[in-house]
Length: 265
Image (cartoon, rainbow, N blue to C red):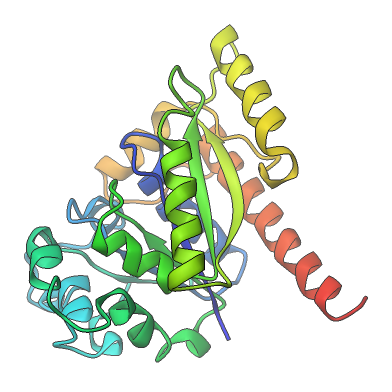
């Protein structure tokens, strides 16, 4: 049974989509079967993997899945990255929150669909929108854990308290098994004292739930998404690719250790 992980932060520009795409692609290269769900109306994860939103194959998107007008299996597309499938997003998602307001059990719409494909994948990642609205609540309700990217810049921790409150509410009312997979430090620049200060502050507040791997600022990461490729396909030898491969290995080891602990090893 696959594990579902939401990558979430209500702040934009923290490396959420970059992490969704490149962690998924890195795990695929490491021979894990991955599904990436693009739940952001901006559809940046979709375009970052070279999926053409105007292609006739992309008529069934995350919007139709959330609205329950199509089966989740019918919206899955393969990508040119090894072992990586995607459910594309669309601009139609902008109106989804209003449309779902009066629907019964609206917070569980996505959860019911994801359960149909969980067994087909090792990990399912959800690229959440940069907000704490109904779409994000659906994503968190359907998830086993979350990864929170935090940029190594001023105001990095701003809004994190509100996100933590939302997570607690989800745990109390919709998904009591939801846990934090880890906090991921992104956009690190070793030349800046501020970046080092943010790392110290985050590790002081959150301790062992912070990933050891830090994603360094790298122009190749931005270029890759512009060309519709993961960093692994674009430049596997650059610093950004090495960072995300290291993160993927740390992620696998972390989950392996959890399974062994649960089984009493």
